[in-house]
Amino acid sequence: MPQLPTGTVTFLFSDVEGSTELVRKLRDGYADVMADHERLLRSAFQETGGHEINTQGDSFFVAFRRPKDAVGAAVEAQRAVARHPWPDEAALRVRIGIHTGEATVAGDQYVGLAVHRAARICAAAHGGQVLLSQTTQALLEDEEELGELDFSDLGPRSLKDFDRPVRIYQLLAPDLPAEFPELRSEDDARARGSAQLADRHEVADAEEAAAVQEAAGRVRVMIVDDQALVRTGFRMILDAEEDMDVVGEAANGKEALTEAGRLRPDVVLMDVRMPELDGIEATRRLLAGDGIDSKVVMLTTFDMDEYVYEALRAGASGFLLKDAPPEQLVAGIRAVCSGDALLAPSVTRRVIEEFVRRPPDAVRTTPPEIDELTPRESEVLKLIARGLSNAEIAKSLVVSETTVKTHVARVLMKMNLRDRVQAVVMAYESGLVQPGDVGEVPSAP
Image (cartoon, rainbow, N blue to C red; front, side, top):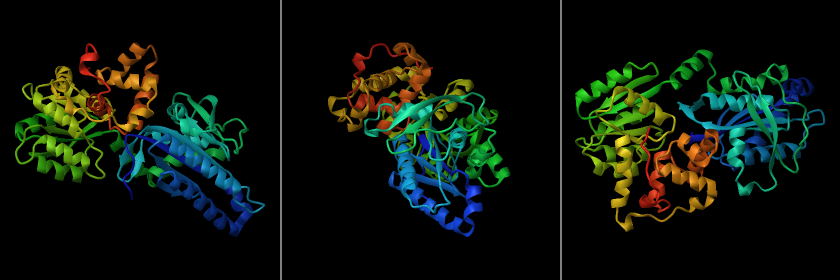
């Protein structure tokens, strides 16, 4: 199976409306109708870059790297179903739900709330209808290639297993139906199959599902340091946390590559200076490997400023000082897992200073993707490069923190960046931000 998209992923669930009634009407002809249905949808999903995660019965679970690809797939799927010459007694109608969120991969499956939210949105739809979450719709607002596609705000809706209502939008296309009854409720028996899609797609066995969900809620950490005492100290701190597991250790960069490939940790604490293979080169090789979704946090000391720049270039998601208090170590790992930048307060300013010391030829050509950013997204990117948190950006721009999160997600998605730290590197290297022009750099949290 191809490598699954990671980071911010758009999930699509589809389901056939009234499949039980179709079985009763078609009897022996039902299998042929379902075969046509699968062929049409699979073709639509594949042509738009979808990763088919699972198919059970009459439902699909597909992942896309970009929201507009998922929307394109949904429209093409509905058009294909509408054009197909179904038997007179088989008015096949497909409902589709789409949501964009952070992806958690367990083995060859996605798990977590984002998956469930997409499935519940699908369950609320009627046959022929395409529903999107507010997150997905917001990410699509500035897409110029959507053409005649539009959205209808259906308002906040309660979804099964979610405490707070979720705002849902209907996708509108000129040649697709636009009028539908009120969205299905979570107690609607006709939507019950769709309401269970997430559970069915994540794992088939209920006990295994519970185990995967429990594992997905824990952070798997690997410690890489050539000093046994350092590894032991970090292990004691992290093992005391209920949501963290130290899954392995390594004493040098070569061991780290072998163990990380075998254990697939969420976070690797990587020492900078090590024998055989240093931490920077080990990070570069690790993150260049196929199927590796680990995030690397470099362990450094106050006298290692010269390593900071190259480590970030290698793909590190942040830095921690070796003498940081235990609570800062734990909070830092959690921050990296949530996608936040992790630069210790004393390191943030020196990162910027390192860019100042770089010669002019160190500045790279501005990536063409930068032109895809809206003026507001460019502004957000510049504030990210200054080291501002989402809350600080929201205060600066006088918008809500939720709006900032949406803009940050758009920036990372459009620029194909792993996280905020890589956004900082790109902003300075491309010349989008000049260290002398950005003013006072706030301390990192």
